[in-house]
Image (cartoon, rainbow, N blue to C red; front, side):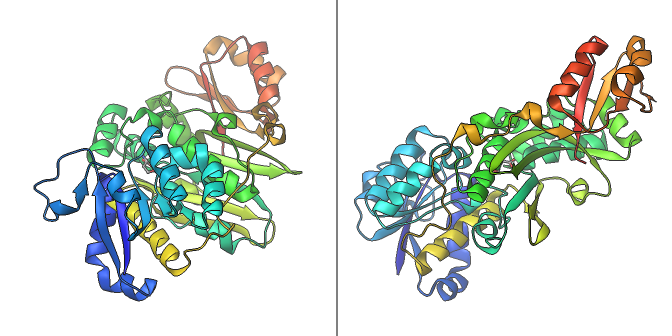
Length: 400
Ligand code: HSE
């Protein structure tokens, strides 16, 4: 029997417990031996729980227990999660996590400690909730140079944008429902301001390139600035708006960004709604792959955690497949050099200057102002054009 412990009995941690109890027979068959939860660490009181005896508030009860070989970290945040993960790996226990903040910031360090102790550090649930995306990137596209990864990586913001587009719901009301459904982070600003998606694209790019792509190098814009009028403009040009984490590689260098983008209805990402996430991976041999599923929520995310547990029970010893090394900021393509088309909103007085600065383009009349789509240009050239115009109302990048 393989004994595990869970740190953090919140949405995901309690989902892990539930799956292990409900799917016991399936898991025993898949893993080759029974998996059992021996301890649960949480600072809250669970004395009413049907297995109250499993709960402890003392990490030593987990880390000093030789019977426990896998620790599941679903507490989130950095402070305690960092110390507990380091201690668990150093004590020769494998760790499975859903904590994207921790993986993005300290993954390379934990992989080194896991190697020293011949154990594993797995994190499938940290990106895309229940969607298998880490394992396919680590294993199944190994024959490729990954040229691009583009995805809807945050369920909460996708839920909000879907409600704004389809039901004319307000931002605040949609966010409240997403929180009630357990999709949002403890502090939902991490969702709304793109920070959660930033951590996730940084994990995907680190894994794809084998070098840490630091979150601080991801140009990150959230969805707070998206208005009802942007929604109307998007519809007028045959698009929807999604928060997209996008990374690409070129000549051994890489770029990653998170920002709301206008997605044409012909793109598969445009139809991904509510809490669902979708990740497009482009390999130089396989071409485009689309990964789709529930990007947040209790059981989908816990399903990815338990999948990692089964992997460790089958292969408990360290391997390099899911790891990356320390990165180098000189290998980052600056955001200013990224080339794209943009939708630009302007006041009426700027209308006549547009063609002289941006070339031939159709000017679209909105409710309170005007808009136009640029040709493909670098962010740096766009900024120069905006300066020549004397300012704009707003801009949104086009996906294609
Ligand atoms: N808050 C995250 C989201 C949870 O909404 O996608 C899953 O990582």
